Amino acid sequence: MNFNGILVVSDLDGTLMDSSKNISKKNIDTLRYFVNNGGLFTVATGRTELNIRPFIRDLPINCPAILYNGAAIYDFKKEKFIKHACLDNSILAHAIRDVLYEYNEICVQIFTVGKMYIVSGTRYIDPYVIHEKQPYELADVLDIINEKWLKVILNGKNDKLKGILKKIESIIPKNKFNCMFSTDEYLEILPFGVSKGSALRELIKLIGVNENKVVAIGDYCNDIEMIKVAYLGVATANAHNDLKKAAKCITVSNDNSAVATLINEVIPEFISV
Image: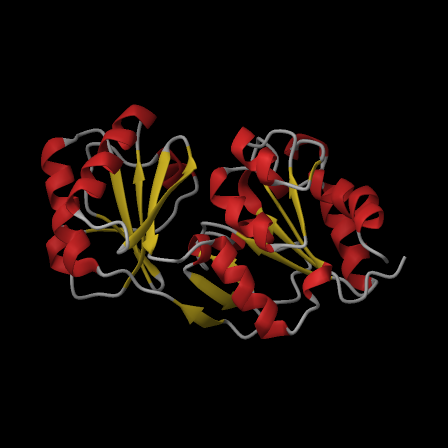
């Protein structure tokens, strides 16, 4: 089958990866077949250029990746950032400090280029940071105010995060930042106007692909803008209902090799190959 000129952009956690954080052999083999027959493939994830590496070593990524939930586009072949956006942390740092005074049992992670800081102390640290042995440094939020922040993650229970979101929105004008949930336990703060969707628009221009041959697949609300930008936006069966409503079609779950099914069955139905 000829997939020449078709771009597939896949979310990683909950989409390309199964519930055990593994990528099935079927997904990998099908992606290699796709790329070997002219397809373009990359990932769009909230992960960084560092903590994504253990998960993509077997993937045939052949164009720049969308990282930090859209705050950066990174070329793994050239090992460099193509583009990145930064937060206005002069305002945000003081809001985070106020949040830390009021809330406990949350983990606040601040990402700069090539580094992650945890500014909420060691009482509670994101379990995935520990499990995946992600490198980080402890810091006071005001001590790193002059560094360039790409994004902030707050990890904790959903009810607490909803309260924190209301507090942040009461302090900071909505046209300064883009706040979103990437799962129920992760509230992310990105530069205003930045999302996986905005990054996909940039990527389309960057590689010069035909917009009618752009396919995106995801599972959670932070993927909504991305699948709206794509010509063919697809939700996995395990996806959040809001994402399913925005998608053109729904395929199988991440535990059933959703990306392989996308390539083998969904794309031929919707796009001329």
